[in-house]
Length: 248
Image (cartoon, rainbow, N blue to C red; front, side, top):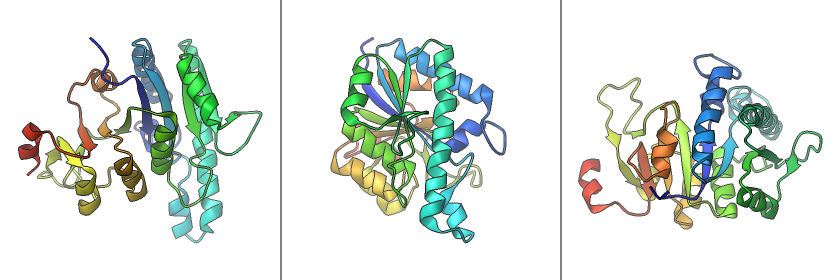
């Protein structure tokens, strides 16, 4: 089967790496993700990743508790580097060549982010992990994911979460929550559905870059998306005629 997407950017939240823990990095979860990425890498897909840092430190939360926002955000960026190194280690255990590129320069740990170098790594079959967000405070790792995806010419953003798509409300708290199979960028922004932050969604909308929101814990889910199968919720400019009725 021919792959629908040849170059992807996977956005993984820091919280997703916690597994069932309340904090930090769960080795089993990281290993599971590494195996999933090995599977799609074997399909010839060029893989890039942006990781959040919320399992270690959340800049926004710290600023609400009185810390100066820029300093808090920089601390959050450093947390993403820790997660990136953990995932790199897991991937290399499976003989997957991996490069970490950081938006904040730290030569002993990671390469500096250079767009052309990142693209070259991808063309050579290396997995590239983008760390430290955009390198600027006040911007989330969602925005970093949208920015990097456009810079490297990714076909799609895969947003890995703990739920199997986008719902009308929190499905954990509201049993009547309705899952959407498709949404447009404007629907996400108008309804405030929290797929990604509004800056990231707007960037994707301006550049017609689709987003798929899916359950990261589901075995084979990333492969299914690559093959063009329906998984989770897709966000793009217009609805497919057959899917529009389902979202009303």
